[in-house]
Image (cartoon, rainbow, N blue to C red):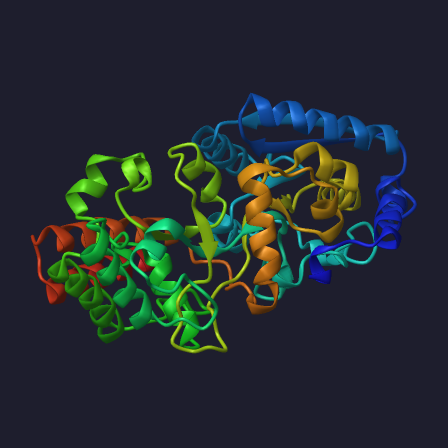
Amino acid sequence: MKRFRASLAVAATLALVATGVTACGDDAESGPITLRYSWWGNADRADLMQQAIDLFEEQNPDITVTPSFQEYEAYWQKLTTETAGGNMPDVLQMDFSYLREYADRGVLYDLGEQTGGALVLDDLLDGFDGVGEVDGALYAVPIGGNTWSMFYNPALFEQAAVTIPQTGWTWDEYRDAMATIKDVTGTYGGGNYTGIIYNLEVQLRQEGGALFTEDGQLGFDEQRLTRFWAEGQQLIAQDVVLPVETAIQIKPASLWVDDLAASELGWDNFLTRYAGETDTEIHLGPVPSDDPQESGQYLKPAMLLSAAAGTDHPAAAAELISFMINDPEVGRIFGGNRGLPATNAQRAAAELDGPLATVAEYEETIADQLTKAPPAPPRGAGSIEAAFIRISEQLHYGQISVPEAVDQFFTEAEEILQS
């Protein structure tokens, strides 16, 4: 798909941008500038990041970048302290689930002030249009992303003589396929997808709805969740999905260990992890949908970059962000370390192989089916997801009924959103 391929002209233009041909656009920022840049990751990513920073500083000799990184949990603990003390880094890595929380606190800079100048966004993949916006302001820019997908074992589908996942297949066809696979091969047809909130989200999007509304409330009612969780109970009764006790017992490994099931729904970049757990060939396919015109799939930002509202150098911060998402050499340096790159030029430059190459190819095939990403989730979305997992496990164990599970979820979710 051409949206995933950068022409030589585009790459050349971005190279000019990265070398500083597009100035910061703020005379007050001329002269030596130091930017603090924080992100989460491990030592391997730190090495790659330093290579990218060295390249930026070489091409922008008046800007010095002071890097800082921690593992994920420690990163957010430190950022909380820095934010409370009014000492945020100039440029910081942002998680989509935290974006609205920090934006609502007024501590992030509106990068829209730099768009078209220091910040170039013309080469973002189509699915990333508008990602990072909160209430009309641009508080973050995606670095990379991935999409919700179907993983499946083609050998088991073939053995059971069922059609492999393809565009246009429905949820009923998927459930029938799981039942046939279990009946013919003895292997479970899949995991119980109703224990994962993102499967509810994709169904809601296929119906024209959303997991969360624009104003940060639940985008579905008790009746809709009842129907969703009832689907899972029927699959359990038919004995076609991996039992919850088995799924929990093997954690943190997946159901691909020991070939416990024939399919699973998840973020497409999980393929790298799955390939390390099994020698079985795993393919990627489209998510089932009862509306052939709406897959519900979208590009979810794996990571984003933001600037602090209190930075003394907003244009220079925007220029560093622009460089990190656009420069082809940065794309080559990182490859898929930060998720598949969010711009065409960096995807073209990234040297991907193995599972990551498979994921990139898969995303090309479904590019025209991807729709706009949802708005940044409300504060507490992570706690709501955790509650969904915990309550659905109780339901799948048979400890509570569907009505009890639904009541418990809505009670907890509303408390979280109101806190």
